[in-house]
Image (cartoon, rainbow, N blue to C red; front, side):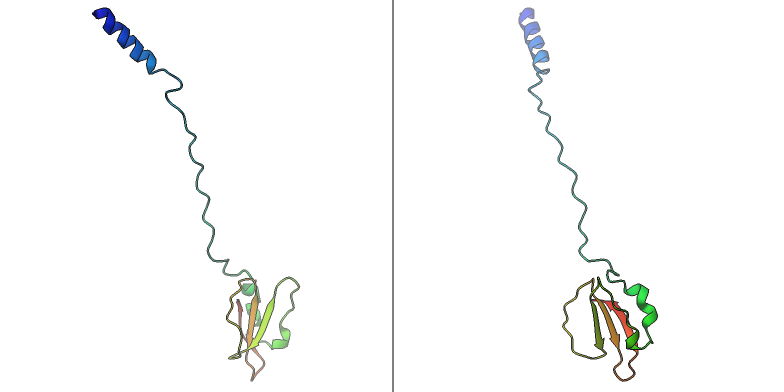
Length: 103
């Protein structure tokens, strides 16, 4: 009887060492970093052009790579926001720039 228990104990111990019993599954890759939902606040470079406020609208520089939208204060314009577009608003009565922003 002791011999049967010894054989069963040995078989159980060796059965736990079966390399096919434990299948190592690769861990999932780490999640991708979140994609920013909003573009950078100054994607059009308006921060560097704040010096234009109070100057004549004729001083607005032209850019080859950026779209520039120039409009009179209170004028009609489309409301589509595009972060890379520079918007310059001027007072139609005085011809002076009142606001420089992206959009």
